[in-house]
Length: 61
Ligand SMILES: [Zn+2]
Image 1: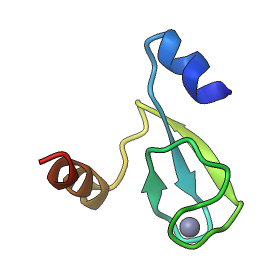
Image 2: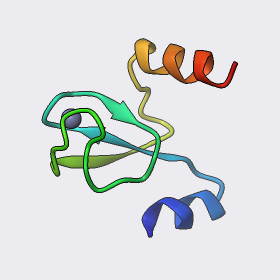
Image 3: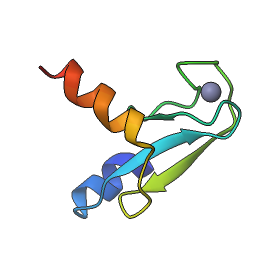
Image 4: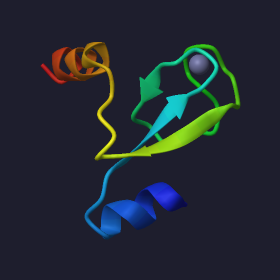
């Protein structure tokens, strides 16, 4: 799985849905929002939208 492989190398990958445009952290094949299979990998250098960052932070609170 590319996600864990990258994590082991010290990189973070998140998935981005090209169908609804939302990013999700969990390494899933299907988008959890619109269940589209058209997801692609983002590495940590690709900044996700601010709304995504906020949601993740409030969840862990
Ligand atoms: Zn989607």
